[in-house]
Amino acid sequence: MSKQAEFAVILKMNPMFADLGADELQRLSNLCHTQHLASGEVLFQKGDPGNALFGVRRGQVRIETGASDGSRLTLNFMGPGDLFGEVAVLDGQNRTADATAGEASELFVLRREDFLGFLEREPKVAIKIIALLCQRIRWQSERMEESMLQPLPVRLARRLCALAADFGSEVHISQEQLGVFVGAARESVNRQLQAWRKDAILDLQRGRILLRNMTKLTAIARNE
Image: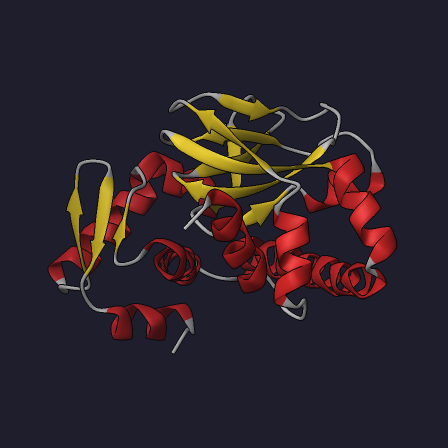
């Protein structure tokens, strides 16, 4: 399968492009090129021009922002099949967060001018984008609610379930990164993970978490 065909598959899996026909997807994917990132390499920083839409072919990209105390807050993890950069590439404004490769990665890149030209020819895609952005706003609101109202076990279980949906039962993330992701100290995260380890819900290895009982973890995430 060519890289353009792979990008077409990724686009088809995204709600923004799901209703496009094969010919439309092919025309859009033909506009892309690929970019390689080394582990730890910065793709863009907050304030950089929003000049491209990205899709992950392989690897992982962290979307992060800085807090007032100098710490880093991870907003999301992007893995194979994920698209990101929609907001900045649509409004032409600066990036609202940083993007850094969590491991060696290969990305599909669709430049803003090519993407906007396509939208002018395909208005139904523009309507899909509006719906997607509304969905993102709802997701951010839910995260804010979690951080303010939900106890740590629920927040932690929800994050692990979300990561498992993207990356499978073997989640490559440090406890420190996970703590930043759920807004808790590493020590608090470690205590909860150790408790779940004793209950055979998961297993801990260096730099990764193996999820053993998704049924129990999902129940915790639902606060059941």
